[in-house]
Image 1 (cartoon, rainbow, N blue to C red):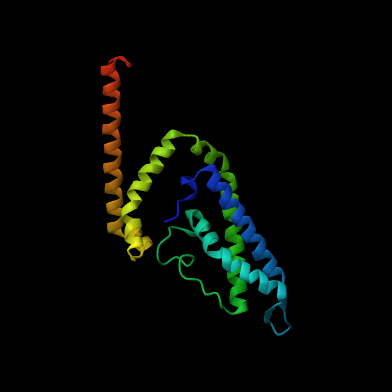
Image 2: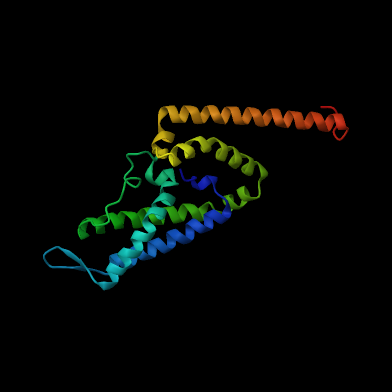
Length: 197
């Protein structure tokens, strides 16, 4: 699963912002180059067809960055329409409506990532953030292994049993970290570097 916007560094924040702004430009260009017919239909000109191909290249990554903001799409699960396989050969009218909603969600995502830029910078230079990131990485390893083995990783992680296992791993990890901190502090006290607490 992709990290939410509150779990990323300033560098990842900037990377996501650049991609989303580029994606929005392609969506806008596509929508502005559709020809409206008197009969109510739509057709693509050459520029719109070119933009449609560029959108197809970026849509999976852009949607994953939008999904990383729960306030925009809600809690991500297997029923979320952004996580389902997108149909690239849709009717032009349906595609137009879908892209218009994507423009709205992309603009909201860009605003969230811009607003979170300062906090992302603070997270990047905070050692506790990196410890939490390491624990997140360790906790997600079993799920990634199942994903590599061919199972649906996202579905397993959002299931009740998956969440239960994940929380158990978190508790064990933080308890282990507390024991390590206690051992480290005790060794510093024995060595005379710290006064007895």
